[in-house]
Image (cartoon, rainbow, N blue to C red):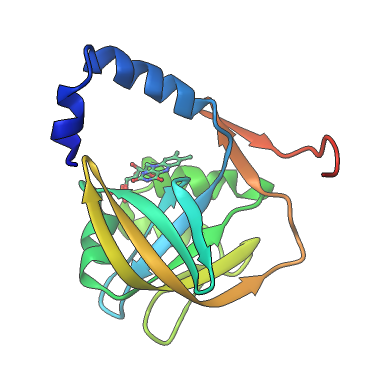
Length: 176
Ligand SMILES: Cc1cc2nc3c(=O)[nH]c(=O)nc-3n(C[C@H](O)[C@H](O)[C@H](O)COP(=O)(O)O)c2cc1C
């Protein structure tokens, strides 16, 4: 079913969109910077719409707005990296969500580059390298599913969370 077909069944799409936005704002998500590119051009963008899809094979998805530069680059290249941010990466999150123009973004932070030209954040809590497998456009966004081909983990596990347009930290309440 397409997005358009779905909205026909909704009595008041505007109010559903408003409430949906509020509901989603209340979900705490870990902040990442998704990077993609090749030797000619590289780009990165702050993203929280990241989810694991499968363990075997290891795969994840990212949802990227179709009007972004990252969308253009991910559509025309094969690989991408999800850089999981820590509490001390707020400046980076702001820079990579429009605070700094694309050409200057990688001047903020400690970035290195793979053989194929994908930038990755050396100080990230985790770096998850993927090969693009499935592309699903839906509404304003596109879901990119990537097969994970390498994971690099740091000792530091203090994720930067985002909820209600505010950066937060995770505080354990109880072990499961
Ligand atoms: C915390 C946070 C999370 C975000 N998550 C996403 C996301 O998952 N997908 C997306 O398309 N944009 C997301 N954005 C918006 C983009 O980072 C922002 O629009 C970006 O500036 C657009 O990319 P460009 O300037 O590289 O074209 C998020 C922004 C913030 C601050």
